[in-house]
Image (cartoon, rainbow, N blue to C red):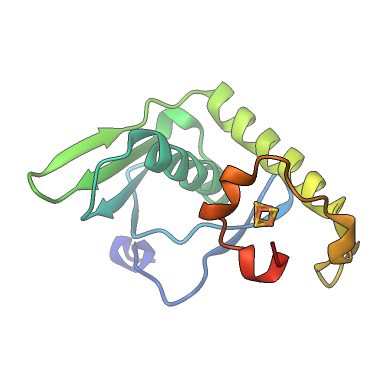
Length: 150
Ligand code: SF4
């Protein structure tokens, strides 16, 4: 297969993959396998947020490690902020990062499944099973307010 045919550039798919055997979605902006390395670039036009986008990039890198069967040292992962001035945020990955993120996916998936009445069809428990928070200050920012009724 030609190198260019392996490029992934803003695909029309949801990027379904598996992380630690669990279904996950890695919708790469730009991914190029080249000379035994996998290059991932995630473009951002807005405000810089190292924590948020670093975590997103770690998710992509973990997904790519599984898809391409490569170790962290073979992955070049970059968040590229194009505005107002081009800046890069690079991930320095090691095995513990990949293992840690895989474990996070496993744990968070288990927590979500515990709140489902039907895991197979992703149906949640009845609304009454979810206690409302005591910290009412949070409700003002909550996107589920309408559904919740508070
Ligand atoms: S409005 Fe949101 S944060 Fe507040 S109780 Fe309802 S679901 Fe929880």
